[in-house]
Image (cartoon, rainbow, N blue to C red; front, side):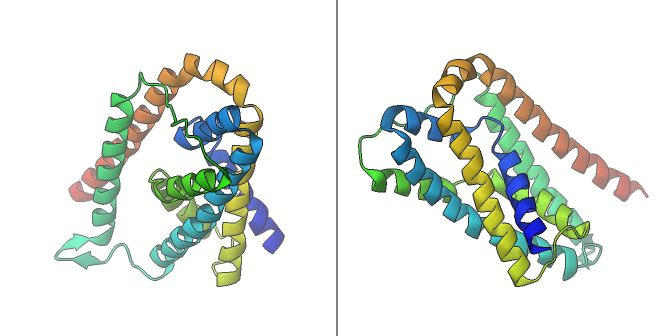
Length: 217
């Protein structure tokens, strides 16, 4: 079961880094400008943060799914309504920012330095990665509610390690094929950004409609 938990963590998080974005394009840029050793320093540092971040988010998802009754009320308002309101705000802000920058191709800073610079940059971007919050709020609750993984500490640790390995493998793929990605990405960045923004707007609309239906019952 733990082996399956490990592979599930690898697969889910690797899928999250397949679409081009700031993190994987940063890795590609580092590989082109500084070489694979610098890219590996970035990837390892980022993946270590990803392990800790995933564990924290999975613990939160476990708490939400098991210890919190989302149908209970606070001041006559259901907890699920507060959660949906937060998620709607988050999705709308992220969608609006993405839409405003839909015509911009992500660029990264070209800095001279050693492995420590790339590692620190990886740690920084690992911490400042808000896209992972809705990602794990959705997939964390999904795998727990469908009982795909156990929710004891050991299982969550193994899953989080798999998550770190998954992000590392996906980012390595971007570093390895960096020059090809650099040539092709500019042609599709506008479409990708528009698609992401529309997807986030759809998620927000779904949650709004859901709350309206609940209110009208």
